[in-house]
Length: 452
Image (tube, rainbow, N blue to C red; front, top):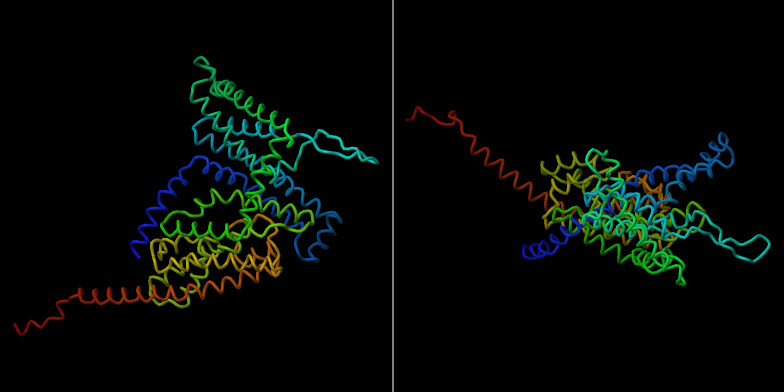
């Protein structure tokens, strides 16, 4: 077993280091984090507008009018419909900091180049005719999830070129005494012009093709295939096996795997949200909400089930005290005390259930949704700390809450035999330690000096 673990460590540790230190993946991760608060706020408004309880809707209508729900959905549209813009700005800013250049200039330049490759027109059919004309407009369809992947590419590539030109020293030098803000503005002129010119040429070339724009080309040949691949049971299972193997070696698997997989999940979530908001059939099973609310509720490994078993079954003082301290954080999805305190890290006894429980959760939840027993997740962005049952209800109705409860109980049964083995081992260790302490606790009262 030790040879197997050593071999896995030799493979996974360098891979985790490469991914964890990659500037572009870090920029994508942090760029999305910048937009997350706005998306959560928008989701809360959308949740209120579509709250699944008729008396609540009647109550709101009595105060705000019959169209209160559409008004309440405006903040959601203001955040999710411009998701690509938020990502472009966040990624450009984050990568600019990674390259130690003016991050604000990098963010602004990323946004400008994204607009340059976006077609600013909409096909419009003239009333009473079949004639279709192009009308200049702000194309919201490319500002949301549909333009997300091109936004990522533009922000990464544009900022990289911008940084490379600056590092070459191709900047306008200002004399001493000029305010720093003015210096930064002039330093960005030549690098910014080069980046904009490059993307202008690329955009112009694609107008000569049958696609008409770079946006449509990327959407059809990159984003759509990637989303189709990511929206599969196999992709989710493989990603989560890697995620939990990384955690087993003490590496934050959520950060490593999420840097690659989360952009796909985010785009799939927004597609569901758009459909939910417009009253259309929800298209995707695999989403960010599917991951957070059904695969690993309670943290990696779905360890909330493990904590409850530890509280009611285990006898060793070490495990009982740890479980009591870990229960409240575990309810809110924080499980580092269990991963590093039990520990799960480098503990071969717990490796199997730690990877098996979320894998089984994924498979069961996937088929429960594909067979129509549980509604697809609605795409509403909830805080990952939202407790189970509540989170399941908010993203998939009462069926989602029931499914979470069943998966939670199933996880307890899977963890039970493994944690019992560890508990027995710890109990023996504690008994041996107690005997050793008693033997070391020697008192002169134990000796009879009268016989000497």
